[in-house]
Length: 368
Image 1 (tube, helix red, strand yellow):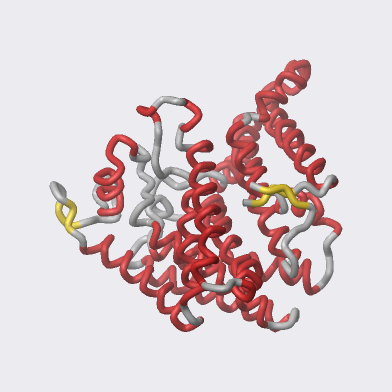
Image 2 (cartoon, helix red, strand yellow):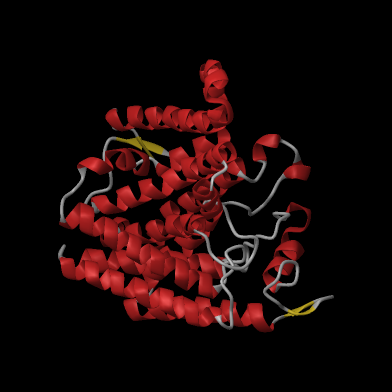
């Protein structure tokens, strides 16, 4: 990792702010709304808590967009970050040390965050089990596609990822079970993870290895959005195009869902289309507000979080800030009663935010 005083040049501000919005959902919203509902127990807070949790299997909640949006934004930055490297590179092979280095660092951070690496117990270690590792896979193959393939070929690759993954999930044979089904413990993606990783498998219903096809497709969808933004002047027309693509993606997902259901845990192709469609619409909204209309003052907190997103993600998972907040706010429990847990969630987030704000003010941006 490196420390730098400069954010990548020519990057649209809306991309950093959208990333900050995504990170806000990850590091704060889920546990805050859960604790708020525990304290209030109203219909409104129950609805919010439900939307900030994942469905058991089929279906889609708002919280399901958070991980795809992370991959999508990574893809959207690729055209901005890779073009200069490609122009200055003597050979295409010389581009790979940076890409591989980033892949490895993301994987190691994933082990730290959710792979139980810090337990120092081999029996608890998980090889592939975290969002950062999904990003690593999507980033690696999307960069390779950007370096070696033309635009039309990248669209073909995106389509092949979805088609191949769909056909394998629907028609592959699972030893000891029969035909693969989109059900827990009956799908080929889970069988492959258990076969390859063995005792180091994730251990839950989520799948990772074969699901890399879906991760790559999601990151590629972000790359397509980044190419669109980079190639066109900033205008309302660009906003309309992003929105239209998003609507088409959502409609295609709903049609495919009739045969190939939306399941976030195994990242089905219908889930890729739905989440990517929503990501396009979110990007269009942020792009229109921030880059077209120039309304940016409101977005400063999101910018602070978004420009150090990986730092925010890792710290929020390694250090439990709400627990630290309890050491400072314990005297308020007698007055806040059932709302105390929500208060400490808010306090923990503010502690993390102050750290990120200090880094931002001192122009310290952790990049990998």
